Picture 1 (tube, one colour):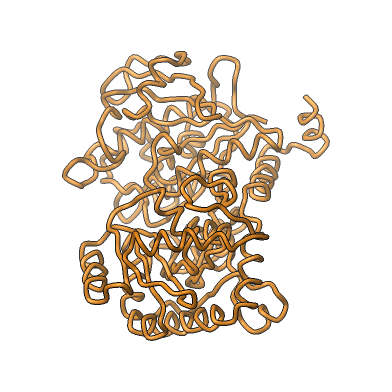
Picture 2 (cartoon, helix red, strand yellow; picture 1 turned 30 degrees about the horizontal axis):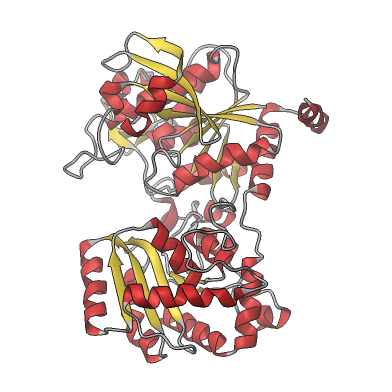
Length: 490
């Protein structure tokens, strides 16, 4: 089976969040299912070298103001199709934001072009390669299903994955003509969204199937507090919505081989975490004793991530004798508040503003608890890394956090299945209670070691998720199980 994946990010080439990790991991995982996936990406400056060396698969004299081509290339084990349109994508920095921090004013043309080319390849193929399914990701590829459904001629089935519904690609109504969409599409049952055009809504309306990155998030999106204005659209298509959990790269995130760690370790020999813990104490200036639980945060510092709630709970955390290490950046008021807390409590709170990939691995490898008090979280990857590294997640009961962490309530502890701590509702008092429960569990070394081992043996890879996606592709194409067996023998 051949699948075309259309996305605006793909690790390690271009990444602003978890979307990039999923887009890069899925083709590799699907290969084990007998599927061939190619990824269509804009040729940003970081991909210019690949585009220069690749083979031109498609040329266009004009695409929204300039010439363009699609270049076939292979890198990092991925088959890529690069949309080389310098007038649209040869820009420095963040792929969506201008140097002034605001959206590029022509983002509708940039990602409209990505969608149009994806639809063209889905219909016509490139060379002798033609996809059986089109898989679009988030608003940046949201117009692909619309182009397929509203255009002339036969086209393959499509699905769209919502990675974060907070980003919807909303533009003024007059972009409709610029994007070559028919006026008939500008209705409440089409691309119209409160008088504007929404790329994401277009995908949700016209795709044959919709997926989200966790089962709980799929259910939550039909409620106003999570659906962000699109809950009615999703509720109307409830039978076409699937929640499929993300996974993590088990080679990159492996405490037995991770070069970012001072000492590697395993579920069978977790004592080597001590070296990482000592390194963290030095890096963050923390006074750590053997019986001191170390909490950490690795996150964007935003209210969506619930970190204002953690600030409220600092007296409770410190009152239990715990320590806190924070790595992240985001809202300036939260950055300042955590920096001030570190200054007020030297040796007890340490803060690094910014992001450091190696340090994030070391935090997972040496901390005891990772705090993720998100108000909403489509899936989340940080808690999966925590499970893999025996850094027990303390999470808000929402989205993928609820689906991946087994709360250490009395029954779960007694049955030996607990892997972390959940709290609800998402508020300071329940978070404080969860911090207390984590400290109590840490004080019981038998319980804590059992939870660590269970967490580290959790299935956080891509195998099950890839199989679920493949089954969905089969459903879309009508491929029978015997067809799959025949395909796998080829």
